[in-house]
Image 1 (cartoon, rainbow, N blue to C red):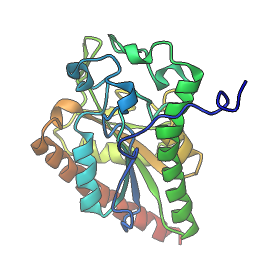
Image 2: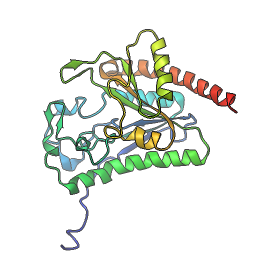
Image 3: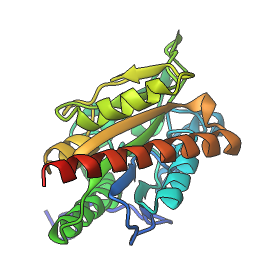
Amino acid sequence: MTALDAQPVTIALHEPPVLERNVSGASPFLLTCDHYGRLIPDALGNLGLPESELARHIAWDIGIAGVAERISAALDAHLIAQRYSRLVIDCNRPPDVASSSPALSEATVIPGNEDISPADAAARRRAIFEPYHRRIAETIDARLAQGRPTVLVSLHSFTPVYAGVARPWHIGTLYHRSPVLPHLLLSLLRAEGDLIVGDNEPYAVSDITDYTIPVHGEARGLMNTGIEIRQDLIADETGQAQWAKRLTRLFREIEATLIALQSSYA
């Protein structure tokens, strides 16, 4: 093997993978958005897919970018988001699982992901996955070192119909080992009176199917929750604004509750 052969495969990006808002935000809530964008590195073309497929839920979390941006602004909360399509590499999956760069998503074959070499998979991981999660980890490190309260909120959206099965929930709270915040949010959402709210629906967090909450929330001992909003409710700016306004109000209630609880134990 020559020195040239030993060089790792690299992949050029036309935009950095990490997008941030309100880096100095004062809120205790740290927002993450793993499936914010749907960019694809130029070297990968369109992954062999037409635009109609790349605009679907298989490529990104439709509508969640607008919700996340609005909540970040309203709460003065730091948002860390990821610009590239989950079809390139899913930043909410352990990088060694098959669904990290899926060859099949729902019923759609992803030609650009068939027979990916280990070197190519590692290149995607180094270019996109690692900088994103490194930035989240660095942010949490800095906040904890400063003694700042930090509550991790991982924002997602879900398709109203998956594999032909309709999903009735408007929103769901997701968790695994840390149910305190999800259950508090769940009770507030149900008290709204006009919502069908999922308790670990339409997904549940696990170490196999998720990365952000297990690694940055649970392993760090942070209070955390995942949130899933149905995509047809946030497909346009009106819906995004409505849901951001509702969740901002509820997060303010939660913050007040957490402060009161902390004071009672002081």
